[in-house]
Amino acid sequence: MEILDKIKRCTECIQHLPFAPRPIIQYSSSANVLIIGQAPGIKAHDSAKPWNDASGHRLRSWLQIDEQHFYNPQLLSIVPMGFCYPGKSKSGDLPPRPECAPKWHAELLRGAESKLILLIGKHAQDYYLADNKSLTDRLLNWRDYQPKYLLLPHPSPRNNIWLKKQPWFELEVLPQMQKILREYLT
Image 1 (cartoon, rainbow, N blue to C red):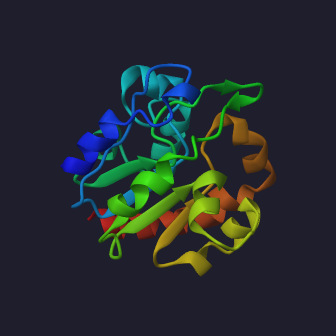
Image 2 (cartoon, rainbow, N blue to C red):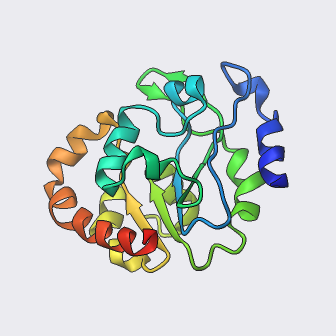
């Protein structure tokens, strides 16, 4: 696919990256589910495999999907807001580079009207949702974004405090989202 080749060769933000560009994407126009996350972490960068870390383990658990199905591009497309590892900050990774989504997402999402889009984390949600709500407010009202989007907090262990303070997410909301996701995957 021509767009994937272009993305893989992209060097637009090379001067801002800690390492040589290594865009990480899993995409097929035939996948019924599109995951839009933040940016690859260092483990994903090193392995060239998206969500290849503790966050990915939790995400697959939340989605009730094994690695074999998760990494099948015919089932799931995985498109980050920033395609390359952005580097470290004092409190985790830097935010996704701002160049990627405006440059590539419109073409990748063309024809995605019938797909289920999972917006994972505040960066993806802020880009796609023009509602100025907090992550918590969005997740409390997640049905307002249906049928197009499912919203998830970022599954990073850094969000354990948020998850502990919001037990309703995993106990009440997540099972309903899992049911919707299963409908798109079968």
